[in-house]
Amino acid sequence: MSFDEEWSTARSAAANVSTRLNSVPAAPGPGGGSADLELNQDHIGEVGSEAYKLHTRLSTDGKHAAASTAEAAGALTREGFASGAALLKVNTRWESQLKTLVAACANISNGLNYSLSSHAKEEQQLHADFTASKIDQLLK
Image (cartoon, rainbow, N blue to C red; front, side):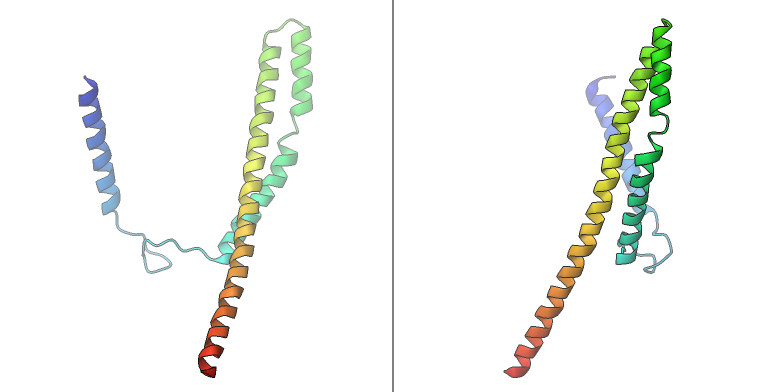
């Protein structure tokens, strides 16, 4: 099969999937089944809180096996087993991935906290602006 034929097949398959997805009716639920995204301050706060909890747990629980794994890798290496180096590599990769995941959880938590805080400040400013404009209209 040539590239053009394969590309054409992939495009038509993607179009079929898109058509099926667009024809699926909206699920019933809050908002009367509309497709609009609904998110309120409480939901954002809950997600941020869960991200913080996950960050905290991963920071401690994700490191439980680090010392014993490094010790086992060292012992295997000293005894001449190639699996010692492999285990050390796995441990190093685990620690790297764990740091990435912990940082991502922190970014989510901090970003959502910032969003809540900035939204509240914007709401206060809008309320103040609206109140001032109403007073200004009444004085004229």
